[in-house]
Image (cartoon, rainbow, N blue to C red; front, side, top):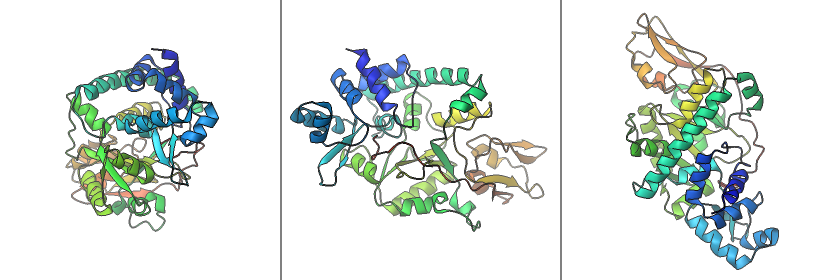
Length: 365
């Protein structure tokens, strides 16, 4: 097997905004998913979406051979398949996230192949965490190299309903209402935790990875995720909120919403990275435009909010909760859990998601 083709595959996938460092662990993981021939094809694949005919003309390969290969890779969740304007299949290279990595867990399988992938993914996490820790020793250089966060946190909508300036992209309901297709699959972080012997402690549904639009259709057609109605989706988000999970979505204003995660502190690898980086004053996740505040006169110090804070931004001091403003991302989970209504969200900014520099086609680039 030619490792060079898997290096080229990784370099091509890293042309998306979500990138991974080229570690041996990640190369080993990609070798588990892609044959050498498939890796070579992705390495040659130009940016954008192509029908087999257009791709054949672009890279000089037989159209019939490409057609068969792309169909199989689409079935196996190794490439994104959409529809061209004339209805023909059109393919683009899956992003690492959201895309290739999540697709390995969406079915919620517990078999040897999935368990092997989990073991490989855990090694990837270990190596990438070590790289992140080393990079954070030079925070100023890290900040210079860091682009805008790819994801942002949404405040629980009912806790900001009194704010007259709430924009459509700040409202979960409006994000959902403007979409027409919804699909839900197993949360990858929760599935990794479960198969690693550390199941989620939140009590939230493990099927809480929510996909929209063309990507939802792609996943449902290949039985990677289940079709949801709008009403079923609102019910799911409510269950996640009641369990204290935080809503996490794209931080780009000029591209379609692809996925929305519901994250917990016991499983989410991204939240772990966010908490690690913030100790060096670096923000890896965009906050909402709100922050939690406490009425010390009515707070009884029950600690209910502290237990539910996924970002560990709250603590009890002299029987009153205190809020670490540098750690609070403005989700509002604590507000929902306060029995004395002593917590509330207040606006601290009017940040709008920046525009993407990469044209995303479904879940491909």
